Image (tube, rainbow, N blue to C red; front, side, top):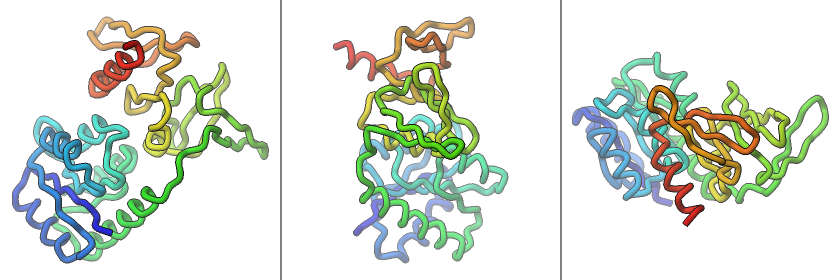
Length: 240
């Protein structure tokens, strides 16, 4: 199985180094290389890669911005490339599978590549998310219908589900939930918030020129500028 791979870095030498390491692996099919964040967004949409090696520090649009704007459209496996280990924790929080440091260590690079292969294989065989989620708490299990969820927010290593005025903690990352809920009527409106579009009442501007989304339960949630276009498009499609 060929793994369609895209390399994103604003430094040509760094791109060449990653490409040289990837070309050793017969399973890797290089489908392109991008010189910046804006190009990466367009190339990922056009090429639909399985794996992306994504530089963190790029002008105008960095790796974190790219991942945030992609949302559920991100490749199954994202490996951040950085010269600074301080970005490691933030990379995992943003939903990256792994990270590699410049200059590249062959053993560490191979480990990241192995993890990516495992993630991609699992993504291709993963069944569709069921219509009910099982939430364990204090020895009991609560079964929650997906279409009854009002909104979801990040809570450290958990996701907090809001359902009919009650809160449930699920040990799943926001990135995993967003990917699984792709077939349902949910939309990410902020790095830490996913809403059920069927519960949206209005979108109103705040005093800073940004927007807030109000839901039927009366809650309001900040709409990130990076997610605004996708949210507006999804809501327009519902009313068309």
